[in-house]
Length: 143
Image 1 (tube, helix red, strand yellow):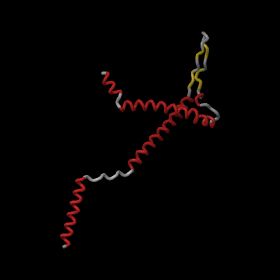
Image 2 (cartoon, helix red, strand yellow; image 1 turned 90 degrees about the vertical axis):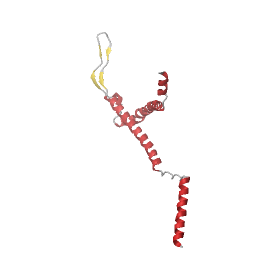
Image 3 (cartoon, one colour; image 1 turned 180 degrees about the vertical axis):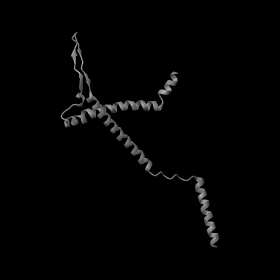
Image 4 (cartoon, helix red, strand yellow; image 1 turned 135 degrees about the vertical axis):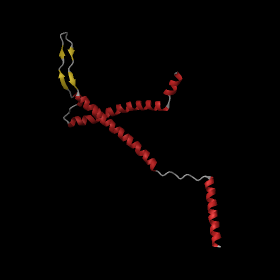
């Protein structure tokens, strides 16, 4: 059973998928940083300096119970939803551009004309015989 598991885990597809998941996680962090650190500040400036992650609707304010413990407020954090939606859209656009670039590289390779394969020795010999027969027929009909 251990041998079967090792064979399964070391298959090329499983390893490729694991690498893809790790690279995807790292790529997600990069895109999240681009969104939160580069894209969102100008958008926040355009809408009056609003930080989207701070946008929320308070459904119930924080209270203090009889024992002196603070009961946190109940909020509807729609700003986080807006931020996550922007993250998703930018990640989707980035992946679209990467896939489109890869596809265009594949299309360029497919558009290149394939080199004519060289004829085999038999084909060359048959072509020579055909040409000799044509010459003999032409010389016999010309006499």
